[in-house]
Length: 297
Image (cartoon, rainbow, N blue to C red; front, side):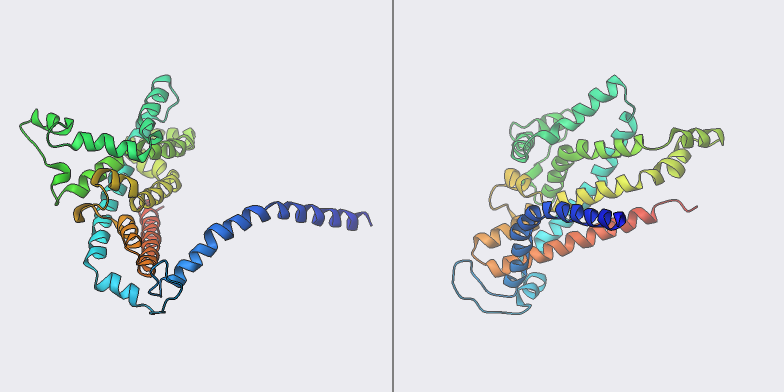
């Protein structure tokens, strides 16, 4: 009898705890799930955003984006270039900083704070800071290059503009990714590192065989988050390039925004779905890449 009462009391307790999740779940469904499902619905229509009626056009919007819209394919190409640069250099830079500063000394803690500082700034502030750096007339970028007899048009050069935006993005978020690597490095057992040293492994061998496998989860998180950031760099792009940005700095998020602003809501919804598919595919590829890079046993 006592067991039955305990079982009933446990079920009641579990039910009460489950009920606490209902408000949050309701908000999530109302503000995220329903709009997402509506986007899927609108993506196969020609809705303009204000008309009470619309027609279903099937996959025409998706076909148009992928095969018959040079602005969308240009934005996708720019975004892939931007993503590749940021995910490679931001991850490497953050990892190097973490390897240098993961020990909890006073100097390391101070430097971690210095490198983390740009992350707490607003995106618009960062964009305007770097817009000043890149100014071809009085920016400090050309002042520094001038010391070596060089100069650059920076954002004015259509062939390299997106790469300079990537430099801004790396500066902005490398410190944030550093903290994730620091947490991963601090979780590596010191005994394993010492054992590798006793076995005669040098620093690189110790890193590759011991440290790198142990921080693989941190690396996956960093690269996944960096991928998402690279496709959501909307405010950085608008701050540096204006609204709407020129073709050389147009990425998917700004292209979708412009399409919505042109009252092509159905087409913009289709672009947004493709946007999500690209991010999911790249994150899957990044996860596989990290797993393949692990040394075999």
